Image (cartoon, rainbow, N blue to C red; front, side, top):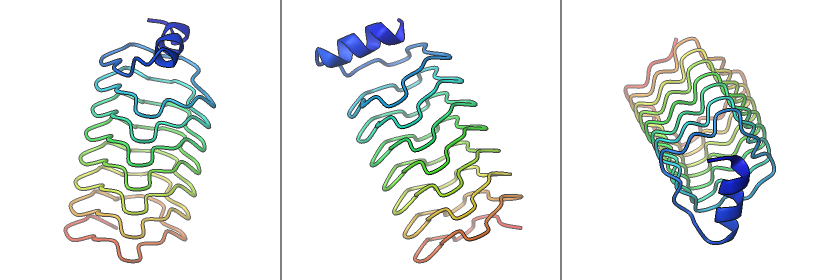
Length: 163
């Protein structure tokens, strides 16, 4: 399915696009709230400025995607592959990212307020000035992550791995 077909069907009320292949698509500045993209391939897509709030992106592949300023408020991203994403200023407020892989991601100034990151991998991620207030990071791996200016106020960090 092409991005134009997806957008057309979404406008007609279709929300389930499970396992779709949209590698290299440009969905920048689109509102796709409530969409279901579980197990979809969104590798190297441009999602800058898009809104995926209240969506289900569990197990989605977002390897090397551009997600600057993208909204994932209350979105399910459990088990998602977000390796090497550019997520500067992305908003993951109250998102579910349990066991998600964010290895090598640039998440400078991103917001994870109240997010569930239990068991997530943030190895080598740039987390400069990230807001983790109230987030659940139990068992998360933050080895070699850049944490300058990150706010962990009220975050649960039991069994999280830092260096």
